Amino acid sequence: MTAISINGKTAIYGIIGNPVSHSFSPDMHTHAFQNLGINSVYLPFPIEEDNLPFLLDAFRITGLKGFNVTVPFKEKIIPYLDVVSKEADILGSVNTVIFGSSGWKGYSTDGSGFIRSIQESGYDVSGKKVLLVGAGGSAKAVSLSLVQNQISSIHIINRTAKKAEKLGKILLKENSQLEVKVNPDSDEKYDLLVNSTSVGMQKKECPVSDTVIQNCRRAVDIIYNPPITPLLQKAIQNGIP
Ligand code: ATR
Image 1 (cartoon, rainbow, N blue to C red):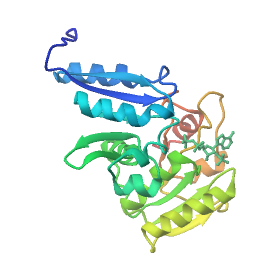
Image 2: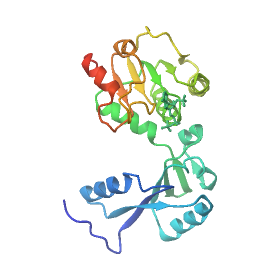
Image 3: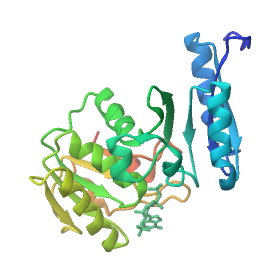
Image 4: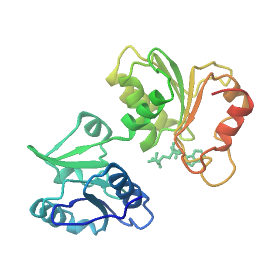
């Protein structure tokens, strides 16, 4: 790999949050720019909420092209933006901001990234019956993109049932034909099982029973560390892709 060459034409991207020191993004995106031969850098910007409008002004003045948004600004950034995408508006959350002809535009890319990763594995979600585990921010983004990609049915399990019910209503607004069920029986069968909770991230825990896993034809976990979570380990043991 060639070393980064920074010059007068280097474009700047970055991530805002508090803290941002834990983020993999600066390393990940700067390496991607290098590998693709793009003359850009990606920097961390840890900031206080009061400074958000000033930072956006500074970004605009200095010609920064775009930035990512992490905790705790995914919702708080919205009033400072000029326009948000349909998904970001429904989710009330923005993780990517680009400066374009209409000013600062906010997007939520979690859902489309999730769908793309599934498509790249050769799987088509349209017409599928899905079991979603979780009803938090990630669950919302992931399930909205599943519905927009024409799944036929979604059942939701969540530790806090009320949140699952609320999510079901949001999804029905997107597609009134969708079959939605909250906390279904554990013997129902599914095409696709999606874990969108944080269970499995650190401890060796699995968010669902063995029976639930065995009743699914395919499994996906949004947790990327560890790469094989206890849920995926059990799926593999049961011959489930
Ligand atoms: P994110 O933005 O990563 O989705 P979140 O909005 O806090 O984070 O959502 C976390 C999800 O993981 C929720 O579905 C949460 O369940 P609750 O809605 O009941 O809080 C789920 N979750 C987190 N820890 C859990 C645990 N120990 N057992 C079961 N579910 C858990």
